[in-house]
Image (cartoon, rainbow, N blue to C red; front, side, top):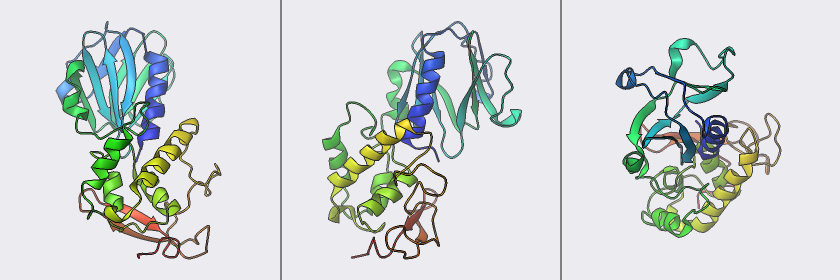
Length: 261
């Protein structure tokens, strides 16, 4: 699942290609937008808000999309073959004179008034990658439910925006926190600060890395390493679902490095 840094990089690429350019053609392949034509409008900017993408256009309109599990935006030159998936998975095509942006498998794609973006992202907590990140508010949000597990608290985008399962799992390992530890018993400031440092460091990478080694099979300490030995102590990494359906996530942890008590 794309996390805050992945979405930030996607927005950066889209902004560099489409920003300050006029749309020459738009093609929305979702029923609610099937007859919408935004050609002639200019792309003012493309920004990330947590895991949400906001493409602001002239005339006070924003294209709001969310990638969720496997959505993606791809950029191509005019006439270049599209390689993001079969045509039936295309949900949006935005063209300028120099670029074609194609959105694949977008579960959320809608238009909102730019001055009403709060209706789609107003519920989010402070964005970890924002230059004006409100650390105090994020900590207060996390502390508001001390009996909640640290895993669920970190993943709740209403507390702070951008953390997904990779960062939640790796931060818990690096801080020696069992996934089911109560938020009220955790150094929340350390969890927030480490999450932000990791995400900001990975803005320069094409992949998510917590170990400092950007090579296949060596990028994480516990994430997706169930049944393998802990990189620190050799104990077998465990896995189990955490949270309530339908938003439960798979957790990974080392029983020795992350004891229950």
